[in-house]
Image 1: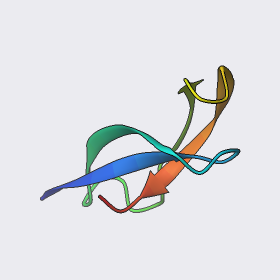
Image 2: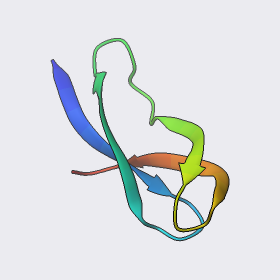
Image 3: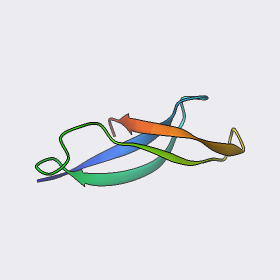
Length: 50
């Protein structure tokens, strides 16, 4: 039931994090504000394919 996904930076489009989510309880796309090493700041990261 849990699917692997990667978190993609909205500014530089790099895949910085991998995580998983439960498709049954979270049907919408995941978006978190996380630190990006290449941008060197906190940016919005959205769900992408692994």
